[in-house]
Length: 104
Image 1 (cartoon, one colour):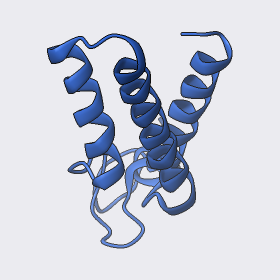
Image 2 (cartoon, helix red, strand yellow):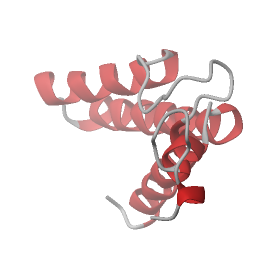
Image 3 (cartoon, rainbow, N blue to C red):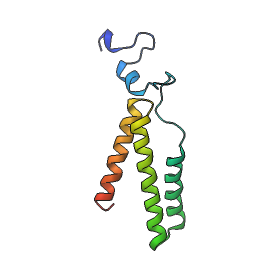
């Protein structure tokens, strides 16, 4: 690594700072506590696993979970605090939509 690839004050590679640096606080941000949309996704997923419903209830839980996950992903793409969060949102959005299209 050459000297211009490392941030002198932190000693971290500049790529790490660019990717994970929170643009609002200046701290490194990889993950955050779940927000409402992710909480809804998690609740719907846990309910589906625990109760293992059939028919319309199962379909409703899957739909609610997917919509909440799409909501979370789009929010991360638009308002993510760093490039990592935006990339993560994009990957989750693509994966979720691919799962719907492919019937997963």
